[in-house]
Structures are given as structure tokens and as C-alpha cells.
Image 1 (cartoon, helix red, strand yellow):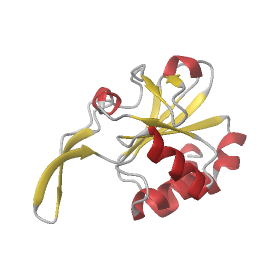
Image 2 (cartoon, one colour):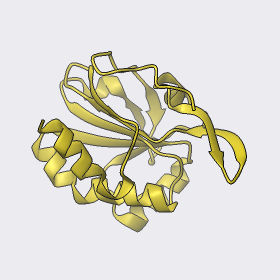
Image 3 (cartoon, rainbow, N blue to C red):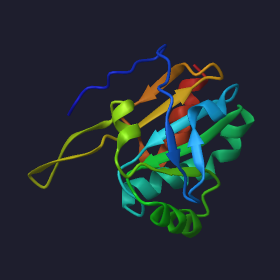
Image 4 (cartoon, helix red, strand yellow):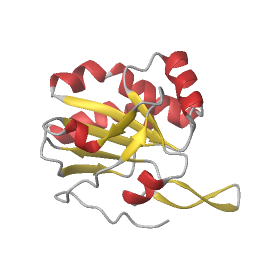
Length: 156
């Protein structure tokens, strides 16, 4: 696996993409706000669903801390729409079909599954402060307890 090139204290790369409703979305649109930007491999897979549902269930707690949530995967807008609807997700998902944003964040790399090697998203979450600086990076995501993992780290 390719190591992350970004570290806490770095400026988060500005990104431009399209959300599930084909509306433009960019980091610059969240200036002055804190953000959880999470990268996940695929809609409707067990780990990704557990992670999204953890973020959904803890969304209110995250918002009380002033955090907004955005998910990023290589899935299409249409896939994101059905994923949001199926699991009642209250946050936006970016369709990073060309994995340009994932590459900007250093989370597109070599993976192995069932003895096969392929390129894909390395599940990672970035916490970005109101000034656009990365404060935390989670590259060992506990999909079922992700919000708990984030809140425990933020409360240290």
C-alpha cells in the first residue's frame, strides 16, 4: 500500500467534484467550517455501509462540534443517490469516478484481496479545521465504530 503523503498540520488539498445530485462541491465552499472528509471504496458493501451508518448515527454529535461530513468514493452519482436513500444518509457523497480527489489526498493505491492486486481507495478519514488545515487522519478505520473513534480522538 502506498503511504499517505498528507499529515496533520498540512493544508487540505482543495477539491472540486460533483455530489449525488450532480451539484458542484468544493473544499473552498466549506471555508470557515470544520469538515470530516471520508474516503471509502464502494457503496453498498458491508464495511462501507457500516462506516456510513456509523457516521449517520453520530451525525448530530458531530454537528454539535461544528463538523460537516462528506463521503468520497469512485461510485457514480446514481449509485450514491440509491445508497443515500437506502440508508437515510444526511450528508453529501462525491462521485470521484476518475479518482482525481482520492489521488490528491494520497488515498488511491494498491490493494490486495483474495490474492489479487488492484488499484482502489485506501479507506481513510481526514478531519479538516475551519482554516483548511488537516487536524487528524484516520487510516485504520473501525467501520462499525467510526464516529466513536473520531470523537475519542477529538476529545483528547
